[in-house]
Amino acid sequence: MTDGDTVDFKITFFHKFKSLEWDYLTSLSNDKKKLLSHDGRLENYHPSHVLEYGEIFATLFGLKPCTLLAHYEMPEYATGLVEKALKPMFDEFQLEKEGFELWKLKPPLTELYKGGWMFVNKRHKRYSLVKQIFTTTSSSINTVDIGRALGYPLPYGKYTIQYMDDTESKERNTCCVPMVEYKVGEGNFDTIHRHFDQYAKLWQKIGRNLTIDLSEHPSMEKWFMAIKNRQKK
Image (cartoon, rainbow, N blue to C red; front, top):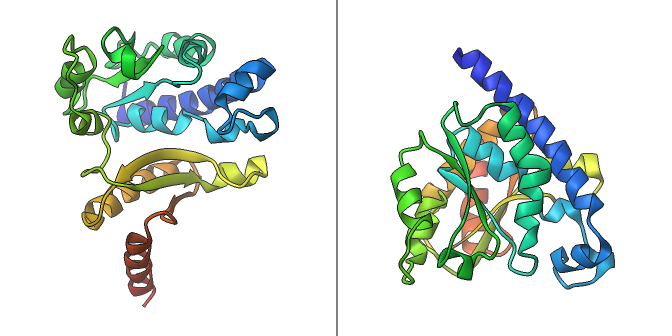
């Protein structure tokens, strides 16, 4: 398969999976929708707030080593998503031959991520770390190593950062469609900026616009705006 063919099949996968994921989330029973709602209320359930296609897409293109699928309030959520959307696409596109894995987490990881599944890019440089962390039999798990295995900028901290699919927000006529979310502390802004830039460029490949929400991190928001203003000059 040529590089061009590889890009084409991944983009086709993206669109098909995105559609199947939406169908799955909208077909859930009301009781399950409540579990996925941020406050347990049906009227506040928004499928666009729990979409995983962005993480899956980033893993396909090697920006992320893996995607962890899990939801603490609804452990069966991940298995449903795998059965209804990810596994059919995994088989149709023969992703195992392309260097990807799909497997269910086992104890003791399931104490942290009930019902969790892993979608893994074997060709990523952190593949060995992913296997080490997410197949461990030790009850002592380092959260920093988990963050590294998931491909997030470090160090951890109290500020939440989100990447938003602005194109999807407009198409769905909704406030926001989070694609990536992680927590960081002060500093390390250049690393975060580079991380976001890689994702934004990937989204551009499929004609979509990715934005970054720094509203919970005032000092970085100020730094980021200064960068953008300098670029305009």
